[in-house]
Structures are given as structure tokens and as C-alpha cells.
Image (tube, rainbow, N blue to C red; front, side, top):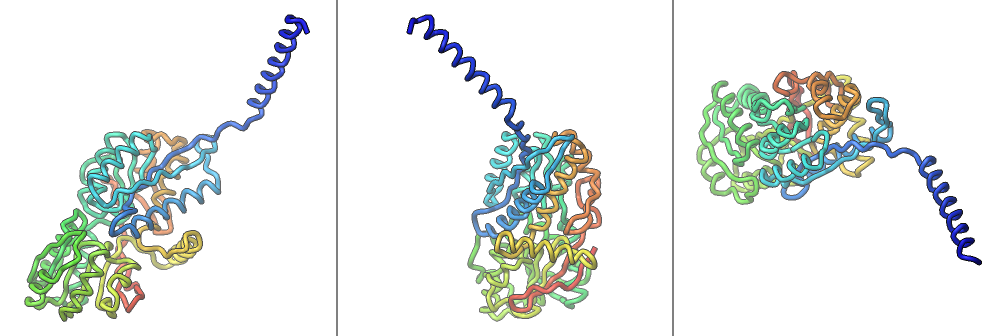
Length: 387
């Protein structure tokens, strides 16, 4: 075949290929915009079971929203969860926060601990990224003046003071000992408990501290035993509270054991073994439902177990609500741009599985509930919901 004919054939083939390619482009469905939401919690370390519980709450919300379909400003979007591990360590927490800011997430659910939430909150504020903590209770978090900071649970002032009043008014404690783990959460809730217990007429006979990674408490417990407290209050998490209960029993300390939501978990009875006793441990969880709300929470727990094959530990319902609340604000604002949906988020009036959610000027939940619990063996039993 002459060269000029070969060139003509090649030109025809190339043109045909181009038409096919163009046709394919025209036929292809347009890409669905992706909206990235960050989640941060400790999924390594001693309280990894709580961090994973939180992450599961976020994943459950994202999966349900994607399955139902989310439309923002008339366009269908796909939600994507960027889950990060802060190891309950403030330095790791700020590093992860910067990573999420650099990745241009439109919002963050987390962190779990006050000690990581507070330093990370500045990074999110500087980047203009809304942050909802489902579990950080130290009052400082929402008292820094950041318009991007919100929480969906009551803070330590409410939680610690309620426990202090309960120790004196209901448990009739006259002498109390207080231990904290030196974290922002542990110290904060212990301080509020101490103030309330003293105001109600109790005498604080001992103030001791440990760390959030300690395993041996014999020295401080031996010192406390000699002062014969009616109640030992621990500001910290279940990973430390469980072994502490075991050592209290081995030393013959019969005082009631109290703590905040950090110890108020399904895992505590496993960590404490037979030292959990019956009505020996009292704790409060930030949040709580009653009446008609119980049915919704029961359904959430059943659905959660069916999806992940594990029971709810503690905070996952609050993570679930926080995630859905954030997306609802984007839908209402008609934008996932943080600057545009932030004012709508701040003005939220949302009903979740954990109850009604609305924020005050600081970003704290209005009229936040607390639930008091005790343990009878491996069963955690609800005593009352207090607002």
C-alpha cells in the first residue's frame, strides 16, 4: 500500500478512536463529590477499646447517611471518614489534628480525651474547622473562646459536682479520699468532686495521684486505708480504675469506689473482676436518656451490636449523634464549606439517640444530662438520669 494511503487509513482510525473516546466521556457518570470528615480517638494504648467504640459510632453514622443518600445544595455527595489515632497523647493529638487540617477535612468529631481535645482545638480553630467532642468534659475546652469548639455531653463541673453531692447526700459519706491520674480529665473531675463533697459537709482525708499508665497503687492505697474513708473517688479511666479496685480489695479497703464517665464502662467489670462487688462502685456518665428516649437508645445498641459484633462501651452513641448533627448542619446550610455551615451548626436544634442537642454561646450542650450507675457483678445498672 502506498505511503499516502497508509497515512489516510491511520488518520481515519485515529479519528474513529477519538470519537469513541469522546462518546465514552459523554456517557460516563459525573464524579460524586467527596466530603471528608475526620474522627480522632485513641485506638492504640490502654483505652483503645474506648477509642474504637468512638470510631465505630462515627462509621455507623457515615454508613447510614451514605446508604440513605446525602444531598447538599442540590448535589448528591459521598461522605468519607478519615479516622486517626491520637493514642490519648497530647503531642500525637496535635500532630493528627494538623494532618486533618492539611487534608482539608470539613469537620472533626473528637477527640475522646480532654488532654488531647484541648490542644488540638487550637489547630482546628486556626484552620476554621468545626470540632465536636463527644466525650471531653474538662471545662477549659469550650472556655477558650474558639467558635469552632462544641461538645455534646455535660462538663466536669456538672459531673463532678453531682457525684460529690451524691456521695454525701445518698451514700452518707463523711470522709472521702480522692485520687486522680494527672490528666486534664482526671484532675478536672476530681477537683469538681472535691469541691462539691466539701460543700456538702464531707471531709477530704486524702488527696493522692497516680498516672494514666500506672499498674501499682499499693503505696497510695495503703496510705488511704489508714485514714478510713467512706468513699474513694478516682478521676481517671477504666484501664486504671479496674486494677485499682482489685488492689483495694486485696488490701481490705471496703470504702465505696466512685468515678466519672471514664470508669463508667462495660469493660470495668472485666478489668476489676470480682472486686467490682455489688453496689460497691458508683459512677456517672455524661449524657443519658429516659422515658420515650430509651427505645431509640435500645435500638441503637442492638444495631451497633449487629453491625460490629461488640457491645457499646460508652461514648459511641454521642459520636454517632455528633456526626449526624454535623452533616445535618451542612445540608441545612446548603454547603460543606466550614465557614458557611458553622453558624448553622452553632444554632442547631437536633434530636438524636442521646436526646436533644442544642448549644449555648460557648459551644456546650444546653441542659446536659448525667446518668448515675452502679454495678452488681458484671451488670451495670442505671440509678437515675439527672439534668
